[in-house]
Length: 236
Image (cartoon, rainbow, N blue to C red; front, side):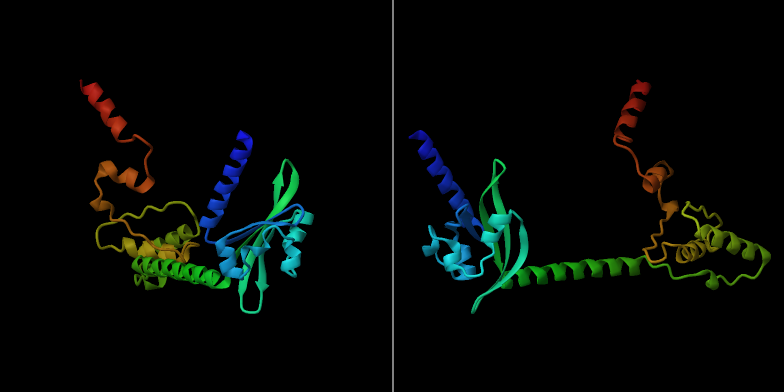
């Protein structure tokens, strides 16, 4: 008696779960008998609960769920159309102890699919817009052609910089303020394989020397707190 109550309670629990889902759900057993449909299934397909307890194929001509029951294969994105309704269906076998004991159909109206598709499109457009803005904000404008110097030293510096642009190794550019370090940096970037990506300048002079290494190369966990504790311990 207790086991029957428990099974009944479990069935009601799963039925309540199915009724909360915003996709249409239909379940058949291994004999192709409809065991459950939720309200959303009725809303999407127009099929009411009168088919519960009856063979699916007798009321849903062309239904592919019985085929899923027979071959045990999952089917996704199956297009279905009736007189006035269009929707997409995913189907999967229900397997218990290695045996196919039923199958479930999950459907979504094309109106809902279209809404999700449009929302995904809007989000992608937002991402592309942000990428575009970021690239414009950190755009490398100059190339080696913009370096106007004609002296041998300038020509040699350009030659070295062009060779550096073909490498993936870090490049250190030194010089007094106003001598064109960023001009060379942008030129190297634009001639390198990374020319299509953002150019991110960093004003190293504005970063304290104690933080420069961590800002450029990152730091491990506890690099500051543990180090501080150790220094304090030594001071004591």
